[in-house]
Amino acid sequence: MIQDARVLQPEFVPKDVVHRAHEINTLTSALDPITRDEQAETTLLYGPSGTGKTCIAKHTLEKLREEVLDINTKYVNCWEDYTKFKVLYRLLEGVDQTLDIHRQSTPRDELLDRLRNYDGPPYVVILDEVDQLEDTGVLYELYRTRGITMILIANRERELFQSLDSRLTSRLQTAVDIHFDPYAVDELVGILEDRVRWGLRDGVVTSDQLQWIADTTAGDARVAIEVLRVAARHANRQKLDSITDEVIAEAVPEAKSEIQQRNLEKLTEEQQILYDIIASNEEISPSELYKEYSKQSSNPKSDRMVRNYLQKMERYNLVNAVGENRGRTYRIVS
DNA sequence: CCTCCACTGGAAGATCGGGAAG
DNA sequence: CTTCCCGATCTTCCAGTGGAGG
Image (tube, rainbow, N blue to C red; front, side, top):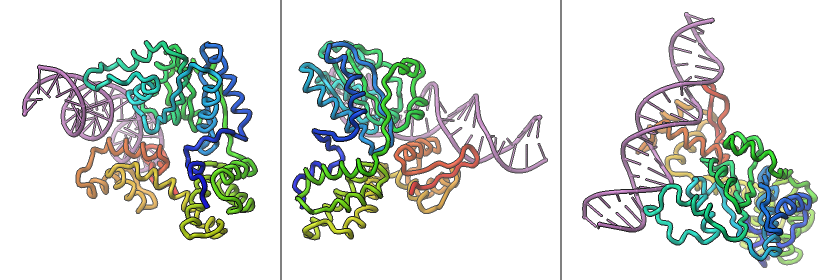
């Protein structure tokens, strides 16, 4: 059934990307100055999840590496590395400058200084989920650092700019914007067909079935590929010769809940308590939520901290806050 | 209109835990 | 071992917002 499981993993970046030619071209020409050893403009990639932003950024950078001998690149996911320190640390990793960084011997701004002093080949960095940064001031610092070209990825343009440093906002007027729309059904089918061809044995899934998967996933390639992965895994376990309609029907909700589950697992114990309380109520007011939380937690944190947790859970898209001020209630994202 | 109050989120400082030096 | 320093986490304090009710 499964010949190469890697192509069904979420991080997989194909060698050949069939769609998004326009986006790739725009990004490629924005990065073109690098081939002449000149400074390239910052690029901003926007679009909902599963529209190929990360994939296209990585893919284009890979092509650039084939063309330019002397270049450093680095991918940083700001969701995982959301502090200024971690982002800078990752970037130094990309140029092998972290060897002797220890927390004690490293004064506060040493990391940035080191990046500034870096005078190697052009350094192109992808900062994914950049709106998740707790301190976006680091972007301004990086913007001012010669030799570093940034590719910034965010879900929504407006939300990104709200969180940005005003000094940076004005400078990004000249940045190259690339918008990503959800995939059309036939594009999504094409993407799935490629993955099937590379990763599964011939004939295990029909094109009608791929069409069906594409239809139910609303242009989100991440979810569509996850459905395919879950379906292949199920069929494999049940020792079937091919993926049946039944298997797909099961895989659709399961894939969606697996994606949700992965986010839930990132929550701390305290955050789990909050999530469970909200989940057991249709909606709940902040004060009631905190009262209940204090009762259930063996080591309750302050209400201010709980507000931080809830903010984080909102960003993970697990919890929804409806209304402002007095009227606000929290509920679970279904 | 004004006051009250539940709620938000920024700022500043305390505390925690880990790693390294003495 | 103790002491020191760091980032991360958490608390404390507080100004601001806007709806409810006089």
